[in-house]
Image: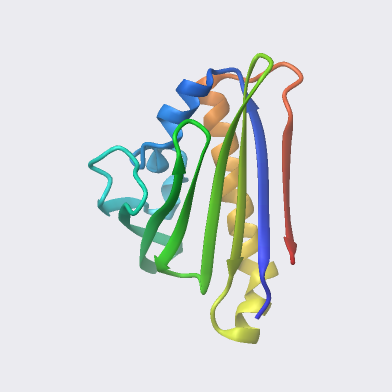
Length: 165
């Protein structure tokens, strides 16, 4: 089974405190997820983020495909980073690191996601045809939504790639 990695970096013209306040509130995940994903938080988002927090979502990654996704917040360093890991859901592995770093004129937000697909060779065949395209669309939407909410940073850095590791 292959391990894949998604990497995304985006600079925004906001303070580190503003970035943390937005990103560490699980309810804001719906704001930065495309509507066609049918994303709804079922439980666990009623408190500020903490290590050990379990959050349940309903999501429709593809038309007519509904699934529950359960994540645990496994690491939190207030104002700097947090990690969420899938406990139940569509992936064989999902490990998502979120970093916030203060830079001149704003913040750098960095996401590193290591993931594996289920179903062995069938999952590997589905990756370039479905999964990679879907994740790219989600992160493209997210990038545009964050620009819409917080503005664009002149000469700001944006970076995105996906690879097998």
